[in-house]
Image (cartoon, rainbow, N blue to C red):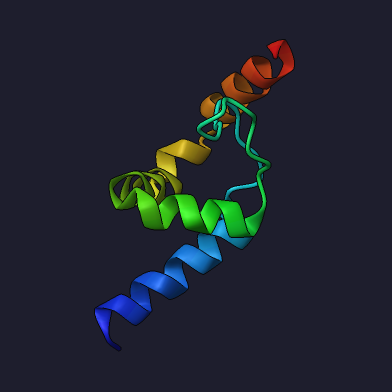
Length: 79
């Protein structure tokens, strides 16, 4: 599979099924950008280093440890 095609498919999958919400993403006018699959995919394409970081984080098993999930619940509950 061509690397460009593979990257595009991965961005599509992550934008539809992995990233479900975001905060602090604004357009040039300072308005919040809605977290839609299309916007996430465009963001990943514009910032490939960030996409790589998201893939690394999402595939790291420690991310889903009970301790980290509890910490995430507490953090999300505070916002």
